[in-house]
Image (cartoon, rainbow, N blue to C red):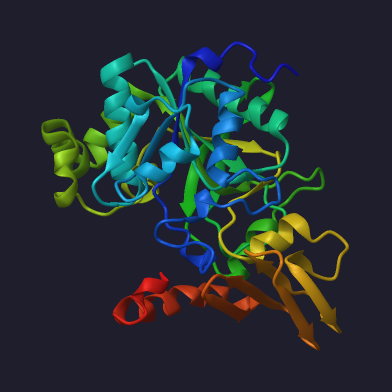
Length: 362
């Protein structure tokens, strides 16, 4: 398949790069967030890999990031046009970021501009399959009033992802089925996730997909929907631009718009995807048949199911008789945590933040 086909010139891709990636601490820190890290051994940071993937489909890209990270983004992406870097004075979650970027793209390129939003920290396994799915989304968004999300075919009953329930099928684009969104469900408990996947048919089709956080739409369509469903965000931005940020509510685009609009569609994708939410993601990506994931010089006796990472690959980590741990050594911090407790890293960061003697470790 030709990955570019006929739609690449019609898509303006925007990378959302303002996140902190706290659950990858201590490797991820204030000035070195997750999207600046290379976690898969490729040598490229997640942000650089995202840009490369999108530049193979279309160009140029835009990036939305925080004032704190803007300089780092430009260092990571030296070919990024500076006028395409939108700098938020403070983080207000994804709804203000999407609204402001859409306004700016509309101002430069008009209401019919097709925009795609892509988180900076995702891993994509099969890029050609990704391009095919993205082509279908661009085709749909260009042809009708639609806010298209890329759904991910679930491979296990994850409790860490949101789910999208498919409604009626509305046809096919680029050979892929398109469905109305029936319902969004935030991160479910294990029983609910099991119930979702139990609906998979004998043919392997599941009416539920993971919510990837990737969206495609025409600028004018989303601006109209924001006026209806999120006036507290879009009107201040139209009136004051970025100066409105301090007074904007902190809302995700899912909560502010996607759960309310009647124009939401989903295209299920099977292209190998992970949002790399915490250290356990490395096991899904890299373990294979090995007993451990070793991104460090490691000597292990009776050690299994353990993820090891050292920023200095000359430092030796020795483990004896342990299993199911995450062990991370980065400069002045060593983290040792059970894999089932990685969500609690955020609790540690709160303790560090509240202690002036320790906040330099963030």
